[in-house]
Each structure stands twice: as C-alpha cells, then as structure tokens.
Image (cartoon, rainbow, N blue to C red; front, side, top):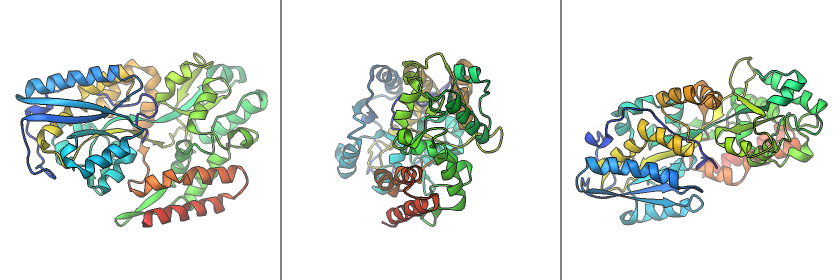
Length: 431
C-alpha cells in the first residue's frame, strides 16, 4: 500500500477545478438509509509525521466545499496509520460512528471490500471530468471485481538511482537494459570493492517484483472470482532468478544483502555505500540527507529489452466513501473535490505527493526534472498486488521475502522456493 509510502508520494492535479459539489452525484445512495444534504460530513485522513502542510491544504478544500454547501460542516479527523486496521474494523461494525469519506492505503482495499465497508463510486467517477484522466493501471488499483471503490489520491513508484560520480569515474552510462544494469553493477563492485554494485535485498519485495513482471510473470492470476498463485510459472521463475542473481558476491554479497529490506537499501545508497539502488520518488529526502546528496541521478529501472522500462509497483493511497454513509452525495462530491487537480497540486507542493491525473503529471514534469523518470515509469505501465483479501495474509507471512532469502542463501533452488511460495499463496487464496 505504502500508506504514505513511508514518505511523500502522491497525487496532484492542475488548475481549473469547478467545485465538485455543485452537481448532484450520479450514483444512488447505497448502504445508508438516507442521503442527507445538510449536517456534518465526517472525514478520516491519515496522520503524518509533519501534518501541518497537509492539514492546511485540506482546510482550504473544506472552506471551498462548505462555501458551496449551505448548512454543511466538515469534520476532519487524522488517524494513526499504525492503528488504522482497528479503527476501520470498528467503523465497519458500528456505522453510527463511522466516517463518510476516508483515506486508505491501496493494498488495504481487498480487506475493506470483503468487509463490505466501502461504497462503489464507479458512477461518481465516470461522471466526473477529471476522473477520465485516471489511467487504467491506477484505476485498477482501486477496483475489485469490476467495481471502483475509490479515487487514487497519490501514487509512489520506484526507479533506479545511480551515483553520477562513480559512473563518470568508471566510464559508465546509465543502464538502458537489464544486461547493462548487471554489467554496471559488476564493474562497480570489481573496481570499487567498498561499494555494493547495487543495493538490493532478500526482504525487498517491491524491488523484486519489477523483474518478475518484466519477465512476463506475476504473483497470482485471476481465476474466476478469486486468484491462483503464479509465482511458480516459468516466466515468474525467470524474473525471480534475475533479481536473486543480483545478490551475489560480485554485485551485492548474500552475507550483506540477504536480509536487506527496502528501507535498508535506502540507507545504504544515501550513506554512499552503493553504486545503485531501486528507490522511490518518496525516498528523495532521505537520500539528500546523506553522503550521496548531489552525487546521484535517476533513470527508470530498465527491462530486458533495451530501452524498455520494467513495470513498477504503484503504491499509494486512495480516497473513498463509506458504504454506511448517510450523506452519499455530499461524501462523493467532497471526495472528488479533494482528489481533484487543484488540491492534488497543492498536496504536491505541501507534501511531495505524486500526481495520479495525467495532466497534473505532465505539468509537474515540466517544473520538476527529478520526477521525470518516475513519471515515465508510470506512463510505461505500473502493476499491483492481487486485489484479494488473502494478500494481507500472504504479506504478513512474508511469503515472498522468505522465497527470495532461501534462494540467495542457497537453502533452496529457484524451482524449490517458488513452488513453496506458490503452495503458501494457494492456501491463503483458498480460505
């Protein structure tokens, strides 16, 4: 989910938004017994380590919304990310105390839909001009069984950070293919042994997935109304092998890299101990706070085919409407206002949240050269984890990291580890 993606990601948009609440919602009220047009609209948003900039932007949206809606107040509560599961479960079980509009991590979606807590907002978004700017990939991250349960509010993706000083010293050019990535990583490690060729880890699921997807594999595939494991498919095995081949003595030694998480790879690159790393746009501040500041650049993570971009995981947060709301139309309209171009632009300025609407990303690319490789990655096509409640169990059981660690430490072959992972995933999907 990247519920805040551990930093700033997200959405933005551009100029020219009419107040979303001026037109009635196109969707009928569902869940609640009424569709009140006055009273208090309750909103839950995630708290942040530095909430003030976010709170200011949201406050401006609230002012605009209430100015356009007589006898309506908006009550915004900021909830802790760490305890969000308990808060949402309580809201699902007690509609009387539940909010109307919510922010939620996109990987939380299957669980919330299975609980019957979120409203289908497909008609609301289909009738919203700015909603047409949501690409199929991002819209898909808010869709379960053909129904749309929210608007992607911001997104975060990963690309390839590399040390410009090291590349210049060694006469390297930014990798444009997977083969060039391996060659550069090996040369860095061979000539600068104090550096990792590329910082990757056995516990870095979102670093490994682009290799699996680029090879034509996947975690799981849709099967009827559910999913079936696909991590053991021939294509997936090719991708798993490619990623785990990076965790070798000549690139990133297993004794140093087998148990590295995504967070640890950020620390290693930021501290100047790696020639490359697969990091997110949301890791920029951390890198700039370290020894690598001013000595790096970013390109899209290359695929096997020269000039191609390996598909990245699209993490981020969505805005949705609770099924139990008694203010169905108001809730949908506030969701669209806050997720619209105007306020997503402001959220980027305030929090660094990466846009979900294409026009906003285009504008931003012109103003922020650093973001271009990430926006190019989004444009090339992003991917997502299985939108099934079982994914939460699979993630909690560390099925993918365990698979990767077993391979890089020699405790299992690629065939053995992927079969074990598939078995665990099949068991989770079957429940």
